[in-house]
Image 1 (cartoon, helix red, strand yellow):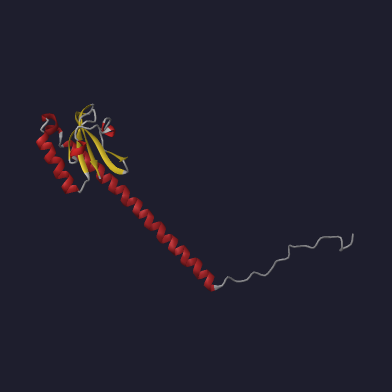
Image 2 (cartoon, rainbow, N blue to C red; image 1 turned 60 degrees about the horizontal axis):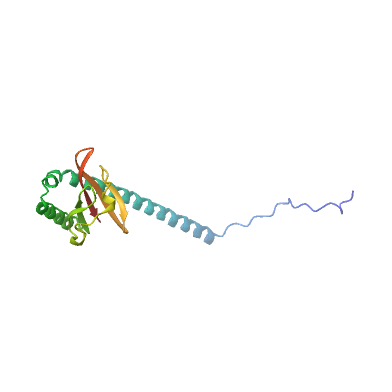
Length: 156
């Protein structure tokens, strides 16, 4: 066979052009900015997790102190407690409901006597829920672990 019938080889190495220093610096700057962004986002995620844990500890502590006023059905004292909590914690609404979800006292008087569905099966430990687009903390108030007597809702 002659050389004319064979296809030309394309394996011959082509000389590489060096990367321009300006392009290299742009890539390095981009990578540095991306690294800073990742660190910032990770910090925000960690802070949000810490905030959620603090909120759950808070509602657990508050609910554990409400046994006596709820058992006594002292609505004046419960209303005062709700109002103080709302002012000190800058909460939008603080409500105490019966096990059925019916509101006993709340800082939003338009909700008194209504039923808050998410409070019907309030957990024994604090829970964060999205209700009507707002973060809401819910927990049952109980005498014994299996004997809930009411629930507390804090709308942030």
